[in-house]
Length: 111
Image (tube, rainbow, N blue to C red; front, side, top):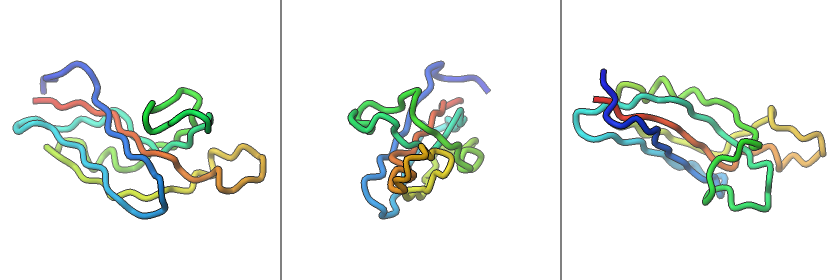
C-alpha cells in the first residue's frame, strides 16, 4: 500500500463532561486508515486550553485499544467517554485529576 499523504493526521475529542460521545476518523473513498497512535490523555498543565492546543509532551497519556479496530477501514467511529487514568496519578490526593481530558488519534490515509 502506498501512502497518499506522508503527513500524519490528527483526530481529537475533548472530554468536557462525563457523557459518552463519538470520534469519527474518515479517509477519502478508496483510501484506508492506518493508525499510528491513539491514546487517552490528562493535561498536566491545567492553565493551557488543552483542547485548542492539542497534545503537550508533558501530558500523561495511556494508549487505547481502538487502534486495531480502525486500521484498514475507510472510516471508523469510536464511542468514547471520560476514562479513569490511574497511571496519571500525581500523588496529590485529588482524584478528579485522574480523569481523561481528551482522546487523540494519529493516523494516515493510504491508497
